Length: 270
Ligand code: KIV
Image (cartoon, rainbow, N blue to C red):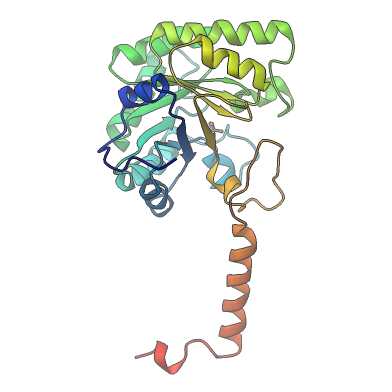
């Protein structure tokens, strides 16, 4: 399917229209200006400044260490690049769990200091008050259910969530609650495809899946789909390039050329 490049800026309203007419939504993470420029110019609908920056940009094992200031730094770089995509920014661990006022202040800082268009927040009914307060301030909120990486120490594993009836029912209830509160979309991460499709059909807001089968749209982490994370190949991931190999070859070529003095040549100097 071709990308509608006539659209000036993707809005939450346009995303809803896309779901209504059955047009799938493409979302990808980005954390810096150069990468976000390429992603945006390709015609991506949503760019997520994910707290996965903690893993892929900073090298942490989990998403927990990244700070609000660091998220704002990444987000402001992405916002400067994005001319078309809606830019959504994760509220990082520790910036909203305290209370709803803290959640609101963190969301306001993201919007004000980065210029982003919406925030994403992990959790269901437990964070209803925070979601509601952020929405009341006029800030669009994307929910995130299923495998919520900020709770990795509670889960103990990155395995598929909501396989058991009780957890699946809680996820259905959470999705309905987030919709009722006014979230404009929900990410469902690593849950059975059947459950994700059922939720996508039972709520009217867009559902974006990652490792969740067919939903209203899909999201991937950019380093994973470009094959930069050498060796990370979970079942749900489609790798569109092998940038690790290509970059490794380029770097080795450069080293060889420098050491052999073939670079710079006469044409490459003044
Ligand atoms: O931080 C992130 O990249 C995310 C996606 C995996 C949805 O939340």
